[in-house]
Length: 114
Length: 112
Image (tube, each protein chain N blue to C red):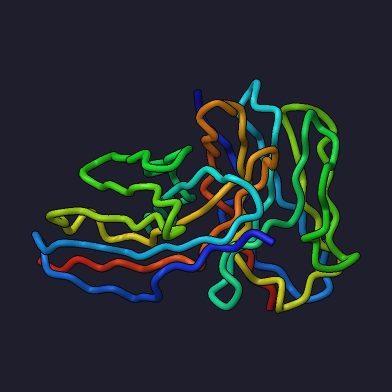
């Protein structure tokens, strides 16, 4: 099992550009979470899905952020237009083994908006 | 709402020293408690967990005991190694809720 795979690992973009972050969760894990990590705010839950359906998007900071999960093996987080304050590390995490409550995190995408 | 308060860092210790990172929580229900570790450039990894009062989670020499009376879940290790240098996060998951609530993280540096 390759775990949760995120791409790209690093992204540098100019302010105003559209950014798309990608996540491939673990097969059979029916929950998927998107987190953002910054020094100032720590880890913030942005949105999560259950069986590809968005359950709670109350953490999405603004309308510039959107997330989709078109199927069980792929999710995207899009920022349009991007701003310098969006610079952060974005993590995707999967939860499948609910008995053990273990989240599996991807390695993250470090986004820098200049 | 749910919240987790953990010891502010950074924490710097010498190799073989004893470690305690404090964590207390507030929850509306009866939560499960976790410690996650984040090594440089990586995502978070589950280190240990406890799902009910007085449970002790343990892994890689680390331990934490679920104390309901003090609403605490302190992380301990008797003898730290340089390879333990990382950021440690305390977290809780309330019953019936799939979301994890994280503390702010504690950066630990072990010097040889």
